Length: 412
Image (cartoon, rainbow, N blue to C red; front, side):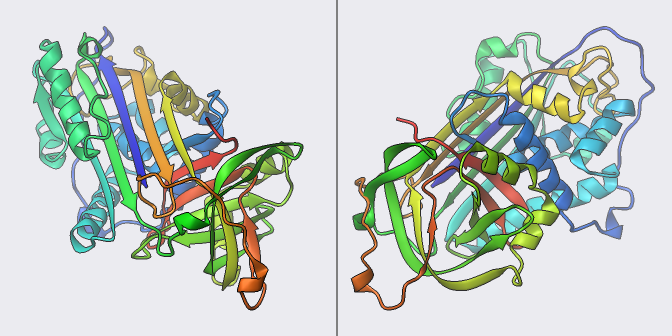
């Protein structure tokens, strides 16, 4: 199973009034940071509600955490109202505390990557400045891992440098994200890339996969390859969400897929569940009090989701309240460089996901094995994802939502 996301923001300079130079610093980083990531989770759900309505894609998949991370990178260079808007939408308070949290999460995932072979999760950021810009020294010092200087007049060379970074981070699954023409008139490019590969703690047997009905609506169904699994899993019901919730852990138990299945079939029930999603409602839904660990018969479609967002991402962020960053007359990124008028003019978001029996990308024969009651003892509870559901890739330690999506219709 692999998830990929790349977010690229292209920024060009325009004329505007001179803004007094400012810079951010690492002052007070030693005082620690707030480990509550509920603000990131609320941003994730808000962005999903906005972005999912702006695309015609049957299914939706993205990494809200990766987008949050990239926007925080822009926040470090923001000032004035641009900074205020980003703080409000991203649920952050000040730069020192945000930088401390940002680095702590980065270190957490780096340490995990070095201490486990059970799954892979990489996330990396780059901010490419044109060589003609005078980047503030503190920016280069504090963001020493992220800042790179390039010659954007060399369209082919600068595009190749960015593509190499993305390709290396995503293990060549996204070899190209920008083209040389995209570099024309660019002065700064923000890039975020994320990659995940994990295996189920309890794997589905390929021989148990059978064709079964998936109900797009209560009266409209299509046959899909449906995987099945009988084992002990955490599951429960959330009154807040009006949905059944099940946790499907990955090997290592650091990450899990949370499956949210609305009580009421059809679009009304699905929309009500999505509207009720908040960090608080999710937290209550997955507490030990709300979920029991017992034998479950789970059926889950074997599926692949690919999505690309461009202008839809900017529109969704504007709907949430980030406007100045995308307006060349009001954008204020002077904490990066003493050059007014930098504004994000283009974004690209690519995401890919494949769910299979093992949790790997390798395809298996399609099929569906019906649960045979005579081959078991007691009758387990059934959790059947045979109609539209939401899935979250959840960090069990930080309580963060890394990836999020909705499966509503099989795609040929």
